[in-house]
Length: 149
Figure 1 (cartoon, rainbow, N blue to C red):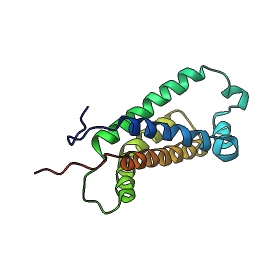
Figure 2: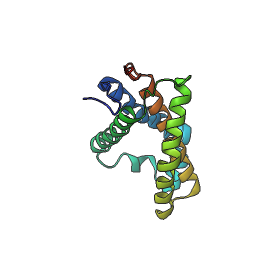
Figure 3: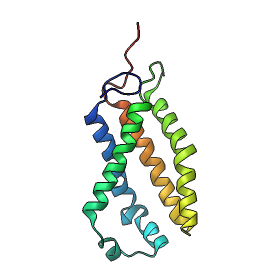
């Protein structure tokens, strides 16, 4: 399948990029990182987190991450003449999250009556996760746009 600019999409790279938010989430929401703050903001205990269908949760989470990775691979990687891949990835990750993701997330969390500590933990996670996902997409082989003649 061809991407937005006519290059072939790197499906392995997109899949690896989709795993990035999940890996970061395992670290970010670990009780020794921000997990206890997040659980306290929701009134959850570690026992509460063991309830529910984790296969469905992780499956849908991967599907949503894959959707993000596909979008960035299709639309935002490989514009060609940027001097820094990291700067390019940072720009697109920040612009997309900062102007679309963060306002939506904060608005939803405020209407759910979440505490500011919970909001900051979630917004911080998504900021880091989106930036990392975009960086992986930008670094995958085939990210450059073929030259036109």
